[in-house]
Amino acid sequence: MSQGDVIDGCPVLFWEVAPSAVASEPQSATIRVRVVVLTQACDLAQGKASRVLVAVVHSARYLVESGLVTPMMLRNQIRIHRVYGWSP
Image 1 (cartoon, rainbow, N blue to C red):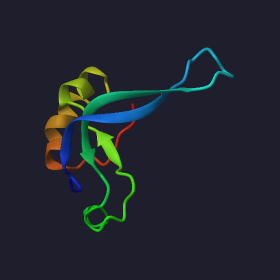
Image 2 (spheres, one colour):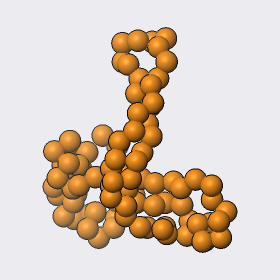
Image 3 (cartoon, helix red, strand yellow):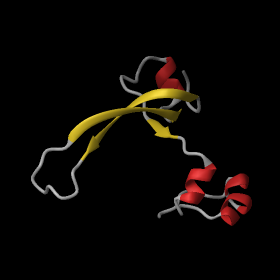
Image 4 (cartoon, rainbow, N blue to C red):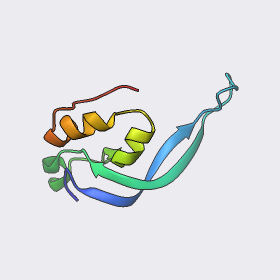
């Protein structure tokens, strides 16, 4: 495994918080998703990392259907690597 690798079916831990329960404890859950490895390759190769940071990979269709990006942004910006972040 190295930085930039895409892993299918990677188990990812997250916390579920009930929206109506202010004082309730969050519950842990896991799902298996497609991720890209973000931890630096040198740290992985030298065994310096005890954990690996990953980011979930979403399909372009999901991002457009969710309203996070527009089809025009996909064609004009993302394909030429000019999008550094966006907010919904």
